[in-house]
Length: 286
Image 1 (cartoon, rainbow, N blue to C red):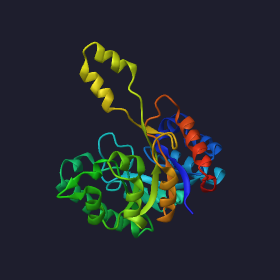
Image 2 (tube, rainbow, N blue to C red; image 1 turned 30 degrees about the vertical axis):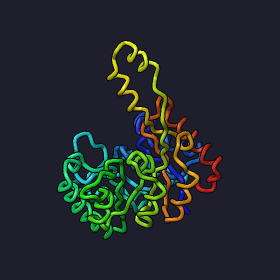
Image 3 (cartoon, one colour; image 1 turned 60 degrees about the vertical axis):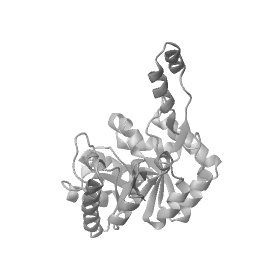
Image 4 (cartoon, rainbow, N blue to C red; image 1 turned 135 degrees about the horizontal axis):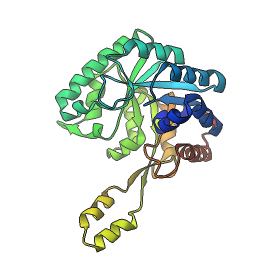
């Protein structure tokens, strides 16, 4: 049975200010008991606190995050430079899954660069497999561009057959695809699903004021930016279909995430998502 947990990226400020253990205590108090670690410095102290959360709070570490090679501003460890450390952290924290959160910026420039990334990532997946660890790739919307009539995500999946998938349903929708269709398309390749709603916000009054003042460009920008991230159940995605599809294909973790909270705190957003998921009948997955 899959377990609903939390993607820690949205809690990185909490981790920095309160530490991993106290942050995960607050997450546990809401009702979540699994976490995917991302954009959290994997220092010895933080790893120890994460391990303490496993022992004292019963918090499962669903997966750890990594990049293929270090990039400016990247906060996750690099598989190229930190391979042994990543394996050690995974063993310490009892997880057998590592995930790459997005294409490197350089790989976005051309199909050639994407294929090179796939080849290197597939090699890393083979190395990790020797240690009992599987590697996964998380999509955004750019993977639904087409090269020669084929979706980029299909190209990535074919070129890196040893790499599993972590499907983010918000980014699938933003890429113009149906989340349920995509989940079923990749089936057992998908071990983790990001539960993140897709909301159309309202155009702010300031945009209408700008239009009245003759600034049509500001209005057009506001018009184009109404797509928002949302708490599960507060947007337009059909989670009553998405979650059963995720269970049907055998996903291990369904991870709640919200990239922008629009004035709410991350814990407030996680509480809203939890309450809505319970109302949908998924209390047994926590």
